[in-house]
Image (cartoon, rainbow, N blue to C red; front, side, top):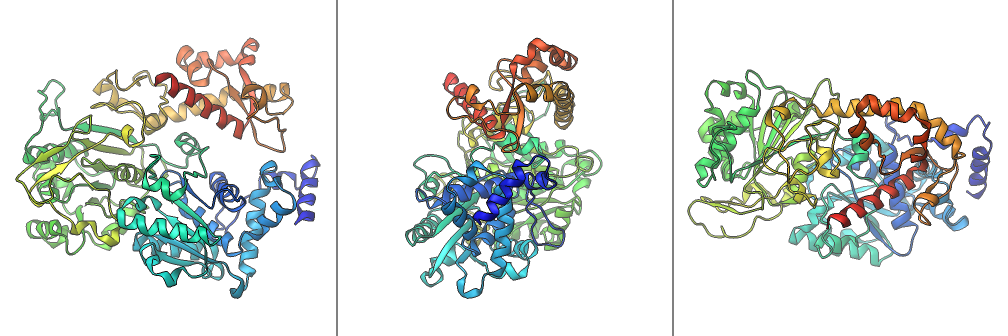
Length: 634
């Protein structure tokens, strides 16, 4: 391996070598027929697993957080393939040349490719026992099929697949070296948390490693999730902005609707009411959904996540919404376990054809106009890129909010799905509990986090006659400092990163400004993003080469950030040009407009505000700036 590394470095140092570009930009190809290639963020996540878990003695476990649709499955399957070979090539390189993989990150994808080939050659007697674990048997089957497809049967058959619950059996843990847990946030449920924590500790104590993957972590320092995963987040440098900018996830428009001061007549001039009766809440939510849907025909599939207590009445209200109800005829389906009481009620009221079948779910995934209603089923693992709508009834569950909205974030051709809308109903802006109906045993208990499907959430319908729930806004779910107010609607990017698009109708602080409803209806978030990216590309052609040459193709991280920054050169890292405050690109556009932004970049005196940074220093700079802003606000 030392000879190979030295050979590869020789290629990099020779700027005229015919293979230099191929080595620098090496793509990790998996073994499926389409030769799927890992994206840079997926390689970066695997690199985080290696550097922070495998190649260090300080930690033995870590979790990877990225939004739904960012390709966690491909990462954990690749990681499992590497673990079959005990990460031997990476360990040999690190032992022989300590730090080389950090210093020369272009080597990582090359060694991943070599390690997967090596894993195929490892004989059964030498295999380090590796298990991929999930909490949902349907996702287990899906991952197993993906592994067979992506890695090929020869390598995939060396990986074991189980549910976390099955690993409560001590014999299944014998000689277990590597455990990879998908949707590891389920560990917050009491029983599963105990099994998961116990399992992770068992593996670590015997010299193995544990990896968790989730789109919904709990980051409270004393939370069960953090206790299990040692607060070791292995891909902290990527935020939602990265996934949106690289078209990895689809931007979602979010509408939050407050039931505590609703306008039942849906007119801006109408009287605001606090909805206090169960029938009022059901009527308002169902009618709101029907006003959102098109007039004559559904324009795409949708899914609703409702409290099981209200599902039968919600369906009845939507199907009785005047002539417009015809758009749901034959398309509205209720997804539930056979034993679920609300499924039986729906079947009795609307006929057995109202119950969703596997065929209906397959049709929804393909983009057919199915309108699905569920309690918790398909809140994780649903790959339906053409999904157009998601509606979420009040909940105080971070997991449910993030996972439900995440169903819309699968990337898709924008010509086929021009806009995706998530609607989150709130009992109040402060998370006030809504408690309606006659008393029932256990009705005063707070809403619990969703349980794994194997614990069948549909079977738990207590309280039977009371509708008790509390809620939080999306910004609260993501621990953002600003509340999002009734009828405020901008792009998903704005809520996650508190960065706003250039449309003049967007607001700086959503808790102190109101966006005019008519203006909201005219907003096209995707077009705004495309226009802004096109403008950025136009400006970049004017200055990019000039700034890189001025800075001698060397990262100015040490000058800009300090000791934490670097001064690596082109060939070692990817370099880009960065705008320094107060003249960040978005501020230039806001102050001078689009034409003015082009003119600003033509002036030589403004070039002093631009600097060359590598990707790592660029991300670190933004992280530091974000921390400063949060500190100032606090």
